[in-house]
Image (cartoon, rainbow, N blue to C red):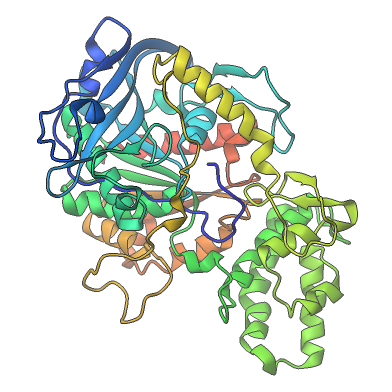
Length: 530
């Protein structure tokens, strides 16, 4: 994901409306390669919206990859799909790259997975080129900075193509996805607007490519997990498209859990175990224990217990108790006790990032706190950036463009946008739904969507991937969220959690990328036939 360092909304979700059933990927059986133009549907043109503006372009190429001892032939289809509004008017072209195994005889036995990053407003180059696509950008293992080019593209031995066909979707305003005709960014930039767009795209793809009877999975990262929770429910309710599984990578479903809102002490509690893990990694603890998971469990227990109780007292906490809590927090976080006292026992994320290694002149990362960068202003209270982004961003951008142009044969005359330029006007309000919310608006939250998706489809399973050093979506907040979905007792087993000694993008470190692949591959295998 490419995301600015602004703190609190590191999550993802996008949507689509209804689309015409025009042939897009069905060109995959053509023997010739290269970019082609699907015939544009005839539409009225009251606003100068000609056929060229709504033309669906695609490129189909043939490849093979060796995974787990077997050679897998596959078709890569890069292209744009037309989206329409409720009036049937063209409003957007959505870009995706699909990888489908080409020697499959019975598509009903072959799973299909839809993947996307988050933001909101991030393209899907990270999951595509770093985690699960057949080709991977070779970077130095996290937390090392990847030097400038030339870079290298390698076969991805951790691609999920051995278990599932893969469709990587770029949210509107990212990648090559863009509004057309009467469509405007505001038509796509919002929780429900985003879900509509993704829903329309997936419904169109499934119909055009005869995948209605295939096992179906959603795999999202960061805000992509927020999107998946709502999108999974939307697909099942709007299109009667039941899913086999949803994978949430670095998850957040309740944005209040990471937002440090005035008067809300929960985020401080949720972040403490992550602060402790990061301090442990950077060896900032006076008595550093050898066992990280055991140390994290101690932090969990203290956060849930004495720390939460102390914060609940607000200004009524006594001086002695406050000093004792500050000392305990210092032992977990590596921050000076007097700093914790001055912070009133409440250290916000950007303060922690700036303060932990201030004495070394370093700022720690947010997406992956193992990364550190030089601090320009040693007096800054809040970290001014995230060193993880520059460490890998150049390599991903260069190789995504090189690969798309030269291997996928697409988009040489177009600009690929890593992130949406104007997504800060995101509409965080949801459409009125019976039983959702109260009279007053609250923080964006899709827990109810995920719970409803599971309750109405008791065979839907969810697997959550968590990084100990992820400060964008802290694992303790995710645990709290999953424990509070309100699922019936017999369905609570449908949700499982996995952990990595990694950050938000655990696939940037080879051992964790292998573990991530193995966990998700096993999840797909166990849920493709139930």
